[in-house]
Image (tube, rainbow, N blue to C red; front, side, top):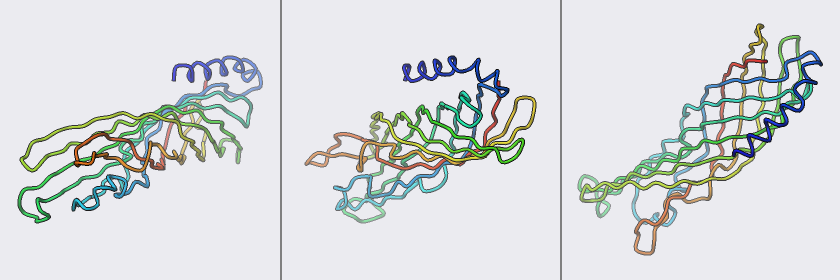
Amino acid sequence: MKKFIAINAGIAALVGSGIAEAGYSPYYIGGALGKGQNNANETQFCPPCGDSQFTVNKKSSGATKVHKIYGGANLTSTFSVEGEYANLGDTYSLDMYRPENGVPGGRAEFAKARQKTRGIGVSAKANRRVSRKTAVFGKVGAFAWENKNSMDYTNLDGINETYKTTDRGISPTLGVGVEHELGNNWSVRMGWDRYFNTGKGEQFLHLDDNRNFTDLRSVKTDTDMIYVGATFNF
């Protein structure tokens, strides 16, 4: 990630002076808040557990709060390079319930599975003005993500255990949006981004042949972010 940041900084420094002479802001930085939604599903929890009579309640189908910080360099009036840090929140979130012998009302096992995703990205961004102060944009890039996986498990005797793992990877991203200049170097941005397959596989909980815990691995999900942000142009 350090090398990734250094490359972006070098590109920005190289072209900055020439851009300023062209009559528009060479650099910008901003922040955004929004909502995220993904396509995670119950079957990704533990496919071999299908005969264990787990009742799974999906929690990540609703919108979750997300945020990001971004910055970039305008290489020309229509083309930019943009970097970001994004926190996508819970990209997988399920609650599990398994009554003893399949009979509700008595002893039972409980588990809460969570997958939290964050990372840094870089994108090529194309801009097109539709009026003197308003522009639309599209972008495509890559996102280096980190998933923090956790599961709180309570057995039939009420004893609680917590399992945690971390996964990392790189996935493609794309986005579109609109930006409007407010004056005094400020502008507002509204947009939609999609982060593809931010996970390692199709199974979250892994067990051995005796149904004992062996590992947690993040599951692949596509996350949509709808956001509103403020940008300062240098």
